[in-house]
Image 1 (cartoon, protein in one colour):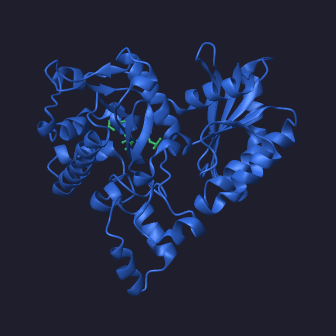
Image 2 (tube, rainbow, N blue to C red; image 1 turned 120 degrees about the vertical axis):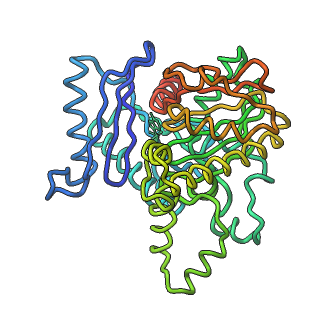
Length: 377
Ligand code: ADP
């Protein structure tokens, strides 16, 4: 099938056209500055989509799109798998907006723009939270009064699920296992970063929580901090918006070094920059602690898997992380770790307690495949 994959954000719309039989990427692009028509941006998602479809129709040269798959950030407690979109589903995604105020409304706008343009086009919503619907309550509950959960839905949801599901599948296949036989730890390290404990193919714990802010040190997000810091700052006059900006956009690698891109941080550290060195120490130390914890959570991992921009490409960062895992008896093969490759691969030595793998993620492929499955039912 030919699937148009849409990742609709508040001010941008990313798309890819994938052939699910061959895996081929037939077209891709990004429309930016939605709502900023003074700078040449489209006035809204509808106009953004018009630009996309013009490009796509040219690239497809007469071939037709069979279905559209949408990346939807928040599926709340309702959605544990991809679903065919209808009006009721769209409204349900919209009702989840308080949990993802920047993302879900944009996802809904993307869905409605497609409906307007092609009323009969099958559309599938693929949720970033869905893979984590298997979390046991001990992992998803916060130790706060019940009312926060029942009234506001405050609990751990977890994100990056589409990627983790895809990587679980491919890591299992590299080890010669069915996905349901895979027990391991998957570190998705991109601009946003999270780590997931997978037991028998299912997510049993994950570091992102109620929002994508919790957990690891990220490009611009702090990850775990003492919540009292927020109370302290709010008493000092910081508003909710200030704190949101501070912890989501000005912290993490950026806050520690002035740079949010891992490549720059690694280069600066190699050049002797003490702040960059500290940031790498902090990020790798925190990640190593999570790996130790999740090894216990899954009852002994069969593999540690690195994926996404940093996980796939930064041998330096992988070296720092695995270098801290001596207590687990994990050892990298230096040559394999440094090798550039886009193939799923093992980077540990044979005497490592369990294999360390690099498995490239491909969220668009995962969304296209899921869409084809739902539409084909
Ligand atoms: P997103 O979360 O935006 O999808 P990506 O998965 O693309 O992010 O990851 C972006 C991160 O990957 C950036 O910090 C970038 O520096 C890092 N990265 C990409 N390529 C390399 C590389 N060759 N070496 C080190 N880091 C890399």
